[in-house]
Length: 132
Image (tube, rainbow, N blue to C red; front, side):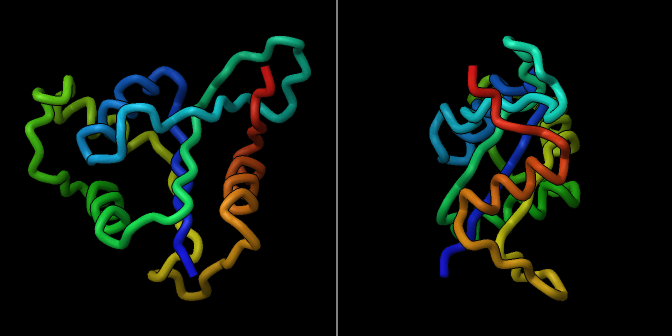
């Protein structure tokens, strides 16, 4: 069974988060799913977050994300990637991430599919995909 990874970031940090993804060898265009508040019924609702769904996250990448959440950043030349360590710390501190199934959870939740995992996470945060 593969491990899916969902990461949500504030829209204001999308460019920096994509630069971070590039620095971590994920490519430069990762946060591509525009999200908006679930109760926003406007025809053109504001995008408040962007989401990433990685359908087969590798254990070493998951370990990097968890370590970063705990304050240990990988040894990367951030400036070479257009970032500062402060910008990286802000992204890490403000992102929401979920692993399914989470090997460190006491009772791991297993979703029917990576897409079901993504939908579960955004629903928990009262967000929805912005179908602009």
